[in-house]
Length: 372
Image (cartoon, rainbow, N blue to C red; front, side, top):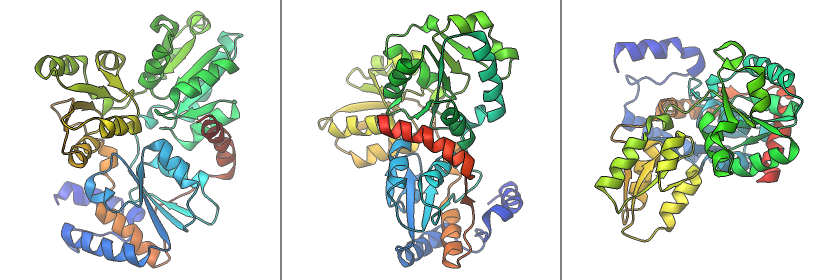
């Protein structure tokens, strides 16, 4: 490990105690101890793993899935400790859906989400006041699940709903039965792609940029728009381009290009198909042997699909590594540190959401789960 990384870990000692350095255990020794301690604590601990995690972490997951599946599974768990191998907002959701006597642990507190960080409560409150003062029509707020608990609470407080990439269309259809306008945040691409598939014109959508005065919009633009999209995006999925799609079509005409709806609109429009992580997995799983796919989503999932379905040709749409670096922060040695702390009855990195935020967030989460 280089000096820069060692210094970074030293700075985070308070968050990661007891620290497991490479001087104490090698990567191989970490895996050996993890297998042993996980077996010892099997009656107390359940590990959730998001699809974007690397294989050396996923191998220890008891439950794997995308955001929606893990949110639904978290509600059914009964073990006292839930170790969430994902990012911060996912662990918050799990904490809100589980009982008070259960503890949700995030192996690395630095595992966040760049998209989720593109919107905060202060910005949303400011935007909301401007939007409400700009129109007499009812605006229904919808937040992608990739956001903080504080933003989920905002949506619950204002009678909106949460959505995932799996159920975005269902939630948006519901929203337009409840009101005339939609505020969709923090991911502009999922909102735009879903609304476009529903027949809403791109000229009926505007982008609110929180870094500009009044989001860079006039009151007249708000009044005219049907959909107000927040200026947020996934850095991984925004890395795919329409040129990459066209290149695959030209060079590999037998290959189906399937992408995640967090990709930009031109990429989704150029691709043969698009859908949530679960949709992509099932589409490839159900395809006949010999099928060929170029997949526009996070590279760990693409590689795992290629391993799990060797009878099919599965490659990444991009020639570059499209890696979720924040997911990458969850490493086996931090997972082991979490298990060691649980064994000593001194759990670390416990994620707790306050009662008021939980109450309002659960209102929005319950609406999502009800509609899904």
